[in-house]
Length: 125
Image 1 (tube, one colour):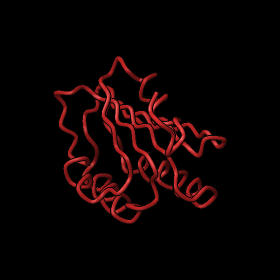
Image 2: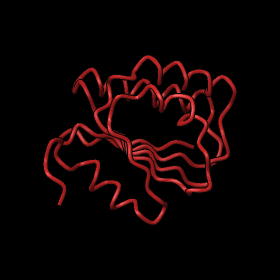
Image 3: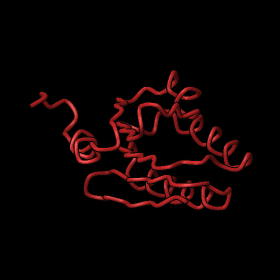
């Protein structure tokens, strides 16, 4: 299951992944995300991974193609997940990502959101 929330004023979206993700779910969220990018240019993304069981093979392929197509469309990416979970997307795409990426444990969603929304170029507090 995927949930998706837009924050237009911050040029940011939050995506929560739970359970198994179908191709239809992925494609629906990808379409919303591309429309958001068309409105805002570079965006920030908070990805929260909770009890993720994987995705359909076609959804995975669509995810890889989407990620490669939009490598330069993100300014920040915050990933919240259990440190023991090795997310395949990260291992495939992370070497090519040019934006700031930070990882946070599951109990630090608020810290991830704060980091994501922190003004770019501002000194760390």
